[in-house]
Length: 160
Image (cartoon, rainbow, N blue to C red; front, side, top):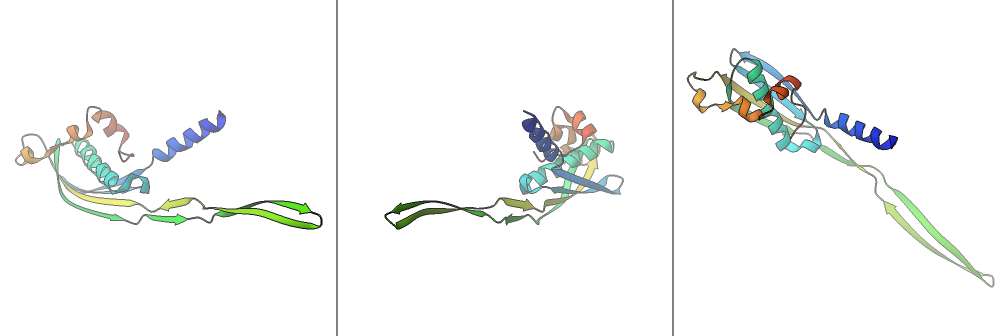
């Protein structure tokens, strides 16, 4: 029971830090967001996290809507196969001074270790409701959904 609890807690900690973002304000209503997501998120997860981060930062800056004006993505994800091991099982039979050996060897490959990240960078222009151009912009609250206030408070750290 304790092992299961420890494993679940470790997995929760792992999941709680799948995504990291940084925001750079470049003008009163423009920003650049850079997001880095773990390999398990995939490039789509990194893009979704960047979009949510744009919504969060829009609300924090006192705006209601935003338009993504540019985007770039990169991936440096790697997969490394760790060494495996061989197991040999056998029996020895002896008959009147003569013997035989029956043996079976199996190879078990090692685990695959993933590293690196999926990276996303987006340029964002923010609008207040009613400003010129806001009718073409996306609602930050709609992007985050009904629990938008919690997400704004806690931040975006998952890629789903």
